[in-house]
Length: 460
Figure 1: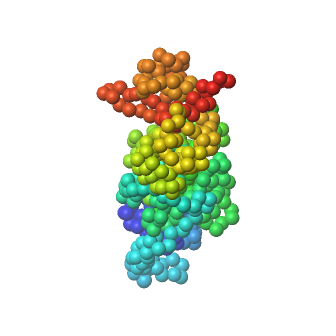
Figure 2: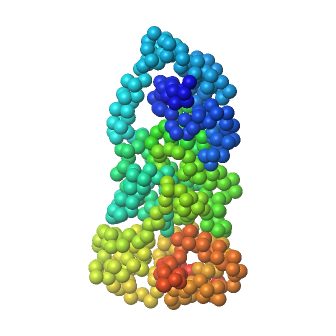
Figure 3: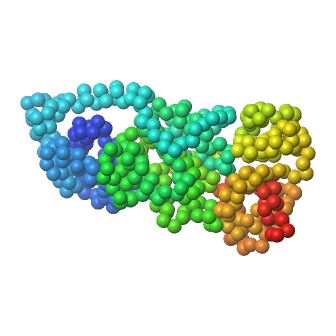
């Protein structure tokens, strides 16, 4: 009996039980199982764990067993399917009717009905679970970035996207606005913050409860990951995980997971590499190392760095009723078009300078409110001593400097300095500009002033 006939029959069995067709991975497991391949070899060919393949296969054998009313396993699946298919072909009900026990199912009718209904369900009834997502009160124009994300997700079928930017730049606000634009394209839309550093076990348990009413969520991490990936294949999901930087260690180079949190790296890697039609967005101050590697070789992985909001932040200054509109652009440039930085600064302008931006800008140094310095404290506390040494040196420079110039002024080994520079780049702390074939580095005015305030005082 030809393999394609058995696969078609297997698809009809699964569809009759679940309402979903076999996906590419399930078909591949069946084909290679029929050819006598071991789970380890199947997993190796698809860059995933043997346990994951075993879990997907086990779920199929369970479905076949329930539908056919007999035990089906890896060793007998082909024989059982062939025997059942032959019995149905010779059935008086005809070859277009699949008879299972006392029930007759017409696969073509069932499939066409499913195809007709699913788009309508997705377009009108996405399951929304935004958990602890903050409420958006103001949204300032990010049209190009929204368009980019929408294209990556809906057209390019991206599986994993990193949304990066310095604290306060508007990453979460952008992601929540994106949800409003594209939510009808998904079966599930989920937002979760990792601000309290939940273990992967806790995060996966929380997600699995959304997909199922079952209370017996497995505790084994490998099984949980397998079930999550299975749901990403069965349903089209948009999952947003915010504050990913809280999984990383302080005092270590950027992107290094805390002890006990290393499983997240494998989880994110599998989301990128396993075939499915869902998308996960990771929001972070720091770029994860796995995304830095994967986006070079995987067309389904992207990262988007949010920079200055530019003149759109004039809306913030309007809301604060600030005067001297001709000086607004200078204020915006100094504070890097960062909505949070500007909101914290305009309070000082309003309270101490009567709302006059021109008078505020006459101050000799960049003014950082205590609230803004507290925000930056959170990020600087994560730096290594090597990174901090580079930041202190760059704060002393009046002009951008090249890497050889940094070598001459910072007393670090070549390896330590290069690793620290790369880490600062992943934290988005450095401004870099190309001049010919040379890259020059500097700090923006806010970062430079923060370093001077904290590390150039007499007691430091």
